Length: 109
Image 1 (spheres, helix red, strand yellow):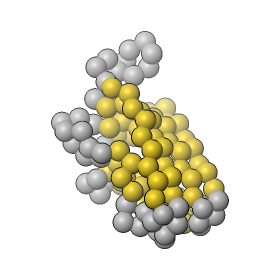
Image 2 (tube, rainbow, N blue to C red):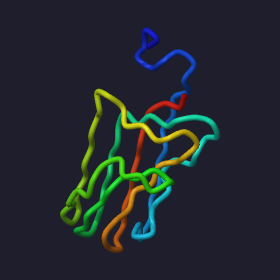
Image 3 (tube, rainbow, N blue to C red):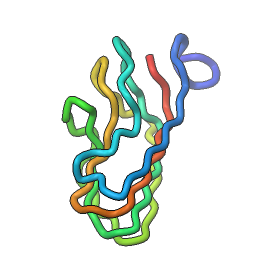
Image 4 (tube, rainbow, N blue to C red):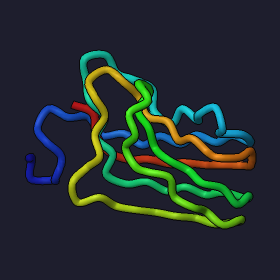
């Protein structure tokens, strides 16, 4: 790791996406060919009660279903980043229609 915290040669990012219906998946961060996405922080807000899970774009579950009551906000910082497989992006998927916003920060390497 570099002195600032992210590994040498990595590229920091922040990505935000929003939708009125994430049942088919909300693409928060697109894939980067031959690279992994490492998510260090996440914020999710909803206006409708629903379950949400995080998956990579190859459908691998990165975090399991979590219940969100109506009008809720959840944030998390991981000490060990969540990582995708090489060459895939990151999606959140909701159990029902309703406004969802997701912001992630991290690095690509």
